[in-house]
Length: 420
Image (spheres, rainbow, N blue to C red):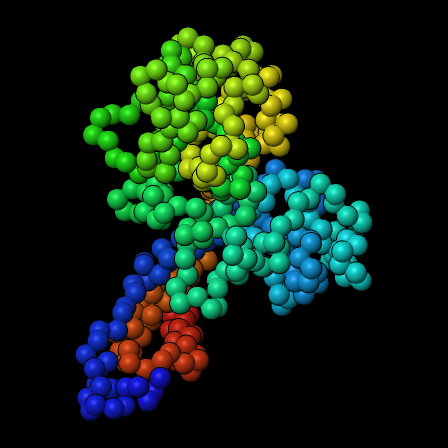
């Protein structure tokens, strides 16, 4: 790299005119707080002090795979165990997994014993493992970050199989089809990969409001509420829904005046209304198992679901049984969603910050007047000393341990002078 800039004369001096980026103390603190919040959201507010094994199969938690202890990638550990029992090991961060129980120290780990919770069953049979636990992702099976990739492509997680996929490996013609706003932020709450979408074809019985779209309409969109009405006068083959930003016919039927190509046995009841199913009635007003469109005749495509789409899904007994048969009963469990997981994490974080503030306030209240003045004076001295250091320090040079030591020596002298 050094040789590339040595030729041509003046090349090295080109860097001298570049302004060195500066960061204020306020910006630095904001950056640290943003990183802490992001970590709390991923970890679900888990402080990493206790093994989660005693909680059983948690509905959702952060999971890690230690390839040092289990190279086959058929085991996962909780946050606390990743820190206490696998520090310095080759650990793969898997973000979150549903219905998972910590494996640390069980039979899969050989002689390795969990330091936090040594008494565990030999295995957790209800745990589910995929190739993510080996450090590979997507249909391409590549690691992330990929050391061989020139540019890291963003990945998104399927809410069904929980695998992660590169945006250009999900069966779309272009990643521009992914629903996003003008600033590039996702307009969808959940993503369902092409492999998992066939088991979720029942979702096509619902109106457009559950499908995310990157098409911006000037007309106000109808809110997703229990009063949403689905027109039942036409066959389900005629119901066009916005998927991946494009209108498509979900039964692969062409819209003709006589609908000759559309199935005649998949007609929704008249005025099928998404009423509240709390009274036991089906929101769709039909038997979901016999009316769900077949995925066999259609190209497998990814689904992008709109915000709060899970709240629309019917929870009547018949539909609930059908979800269980399809292995997706968790879709109607509020605590399964990433949105709820992060909401709980934020609540835990706010509570933790309030407790910290309370501890600080109690500490100050326990001091007498002289002690309070001493602490406030020390804080003021620290502020002035740092400000003086930053004003006189040569920004072209690195900060050394000697510089830091000099700052604290000056603070000690000021304290001695103040007390003498």
